[in-house]
Length: 218
Length: 154
Image 1 (cartoon, rainbow over the protein chains, first blue to last red):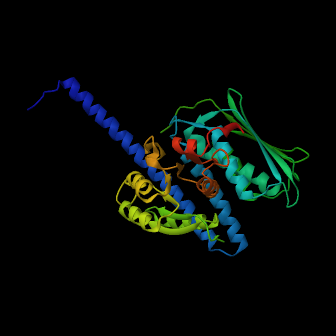
Image 2 (cartoon, rainbow over the protein chains, first blue to last red):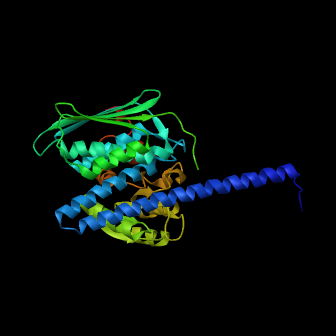
């Protein structure tokens, strides 16, 4: 028993099959990336637990936070629109992680987040910038015993997405070397404008990411 | 420190390093890690033998994408509460195969420990202490069963 599909039907079926295969492959790669990021995080955590030297532990934890920021991006990627990345939900998620890591119940974190989407290709860079700025505020602005407040504001300015992280802590302390290098470099990569000011009290960092979509260069 | 009456937790995960780290987090949350399975058959056998209160189940196991069926059997035949931990959140059936919810991979340490603390209250009291923490999605049935659905804004 044979049914003879018309050439059109056969072509449609082949196309459908190819599409289905592409979808399955994308899913498989997505799944692998997520699992491997989890594996990387687990390796760092396991190493941290076996390290007694405080300096080494702090370094490992900092690396873990950066990996977690990238992992959080991947968890949220492909959830809805595969090409755009919702920043507000991500910032909420990351803030939860960083606040828990800081382990301070005397710090209040206020979130005022508008829904903004950035290209998925920029998501990891942006995530690392948020991670550094917010992590910096939580770790350095409030020495033990000094309570305070950190405000995270995300605004859609139409032509740009503006992120502001402001704390009312001890102000510029002239330290973080590598963290601020990461922020500067990634802001260059994002064509973003970075402004860090002594807000007296505290520090206010503003990152303005232009939203003009650039053609993708392969 | 694990309390004498801590919840018993079974880990079903084919990546041993993830399982090892997860076992740490389980103990850190004050729960008792009672076993680890890597395949679906092993998972169901261990679940019925050890009768854990909670099973943390990945979808992809050593014998393939069998975690969903394993979860169904663990819930129905062994009476445990199942929580999926998977990078495949979208592939879960609408009824979560009887599981109470899911944590998407890659998860953070914080997401796991807060979810475990939350689920411990749910399992013990049969009632949620509030809306689920960030990172944990509850199945519709359990959202209703534990009364966890209404307090989103509260």
